[in-house]
Length: 142
Image (cartoon, one colour):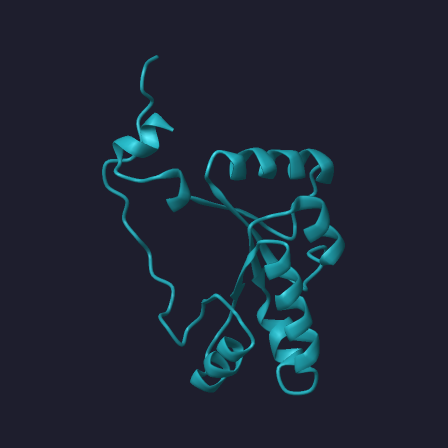
């Protein structure tokens, strides 16, 4: 954590992300996430609604950020919005922030805002770009 502070960041500025393809021991992964959160870090569960990233995994891992997949929101935004609203409410009651991925349309931003989504990610805001990292982290002797 001393290294994080030396770069001018706080623990809360760091987000670790668990992808839906991770095939680790879920219980141990959940314990690790709990420890990271207790130290002030944020942990995101990626691609909720795809593959293994479902409500059972959310309840096991207990991340403080959930990234809802583009496919889940597209499948439900017009035909079954109550399903999305219920999920968002459930995540908020579990003290998790909600990010919706794959936003490409301003009208969806407005609809999802009204449903309580906290953050948005997608081409509508900016296409992915490479970031050059200067002054990479160096090992600091104890």
